[in-house]
Image (cartoon, rainbow, N blue to C red; front, top):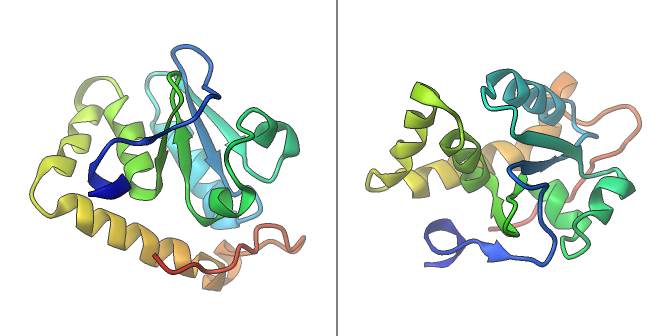
Amino acid sequence: MGRLFGEPQRIAAQATAGKLAVLYDGGCEMCRTVAAGILRYDNTESLELLDANDPAARGHFPELRLDDLLYELHVIDDRGRVYRGARAVNEILRRQAGLRSLVAYLWYLPGYAWLADRQYKAIAGRRYRFGALGKTDAGVGTAPARQP
């Protein structure tokens, strides 16, 4: 069943105790906008947003490759579990307090995880084509498109 439905990858590095490290492509305007939205949505103050382009941020998680980090959102918990793409978004939602966490339960509806993963990949694969919301002038964050 793979990453989509099975156990997440485990790495030796971990997020700060009680926190969720969220690695995003800070060289992508759309990704920065989404990261800011994640912070506004967070009602637990347990998220640590880290720009994957920052060598210091990547240094906390040396097992993760830059190409992979720029391809899709990565979330690492305080036990070293790595969630990617749509599953990372689901993990962020699942960790919210109150009614906000209920959105995460959509993941358990038949077909939802597959659909969420496909939609995430469709948007992520085209994010640099969205003009003002894509690549920055610095040219950072120009990750090559990968096939799933």
